[in-house]
Amino acid sequence: QVQLVESGGGLVQAGGSLRLSCAASGLTFRRYSMGWFRQAPGKERELVAAISWSSSGSTYYSEPVKGRFTISRDNAKNTVYLQMNNLKPEDTAVYYCAASLSINPRATGAFGSWGQGTQVTVSS
Image (cartoon, rainbow, N blue to C red; front, side):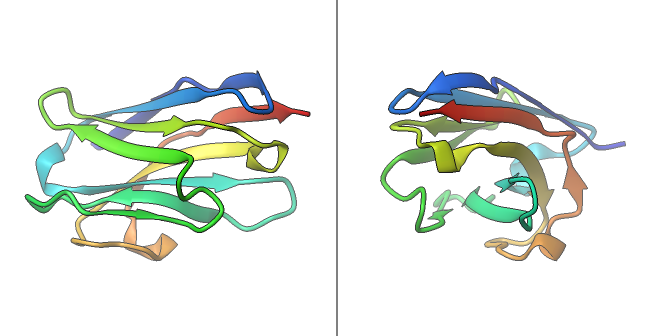
């Protein structure tokens, strides 16, 4: 079965950086678009970044993270990354990795497989 395992979360001061990783198994990774979602307490889960399975590797970023976060993938390692720079307290959330067969998925429902999440806490 598909397994997505996130790592790299933690506590960081505002302005700092973290790099999240998501190791995938049980799927043909290069055929899946990958996304990073986050969910803060009392808020809905939201897509923050996605990268397509297509050869162009097109990416998407939500407005709050554009210019600060970078999503990338290594198909040889079946891993997707989220580099987060200039972190802000409002970035505090549980971050989830997800996989989709769609070429440019955006909706939560387009992602069929999910990781267990990793906590990111940004102190002010």
